[in-house]
Length: 269
Image (tube, rainbow, N blue to C red; front, side, top):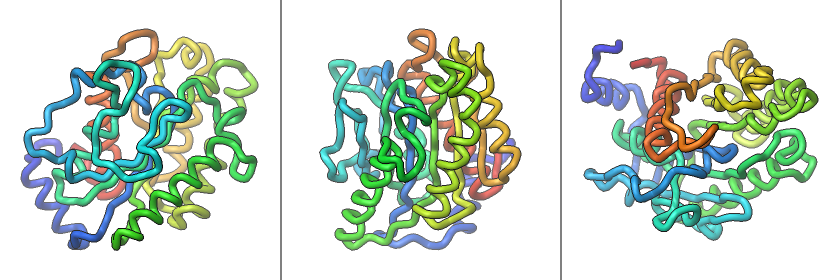
């Protein structure tokens, strides 16, 4: 499969998929900490868009207490802050790759740097950041439907865990906390127990190296469920101890897309 051309693979995916109308949206949820936000990803190096995909990709984002799309759908673009031209996360190359294969993606992105599942996102129903994200997600879907679109939620990507590796208590609780969250978003929110889920965390973060329970939890969940994938961040270019550069973020989005492709269509290249 690794030798198959992208052109042929794209055609195969189209053959496998249900034909899309202009009013059918493939919604991908992307959430997590600073590397999802793109904290050190300078938009002066925003990847070129020769096929002008960005203008065709709806984008709703909330970088908590920092910047947002103001509770409206915009088009894919850099987000305000951090740098003169803004910043961006792995959603850009991920969404463009999905678009390239003939689908009609929209990206809902919700992020907050240095945030723990246990203390900040919290369990469903505890009025933490997770509940706030779900409220925003539901609003974003409502807005799409009000515009006449049919919305199909296709994946959930979670890039987070470094803060939960900051002490033994949080690290030891991480598996149960993450499993609870994934169960809720699949069974209660999306109502699709087989929803593809892509996980990731910086394995080389100092806290994670000291307490690898976080990585092990994500890897364990991927082994226990054929519709969950763990993605590595090894080898991605960084600007400091943990934050990816624009180049690293661009490559990260491609890794996430390949994981999604394998989960959704069992195609790995």
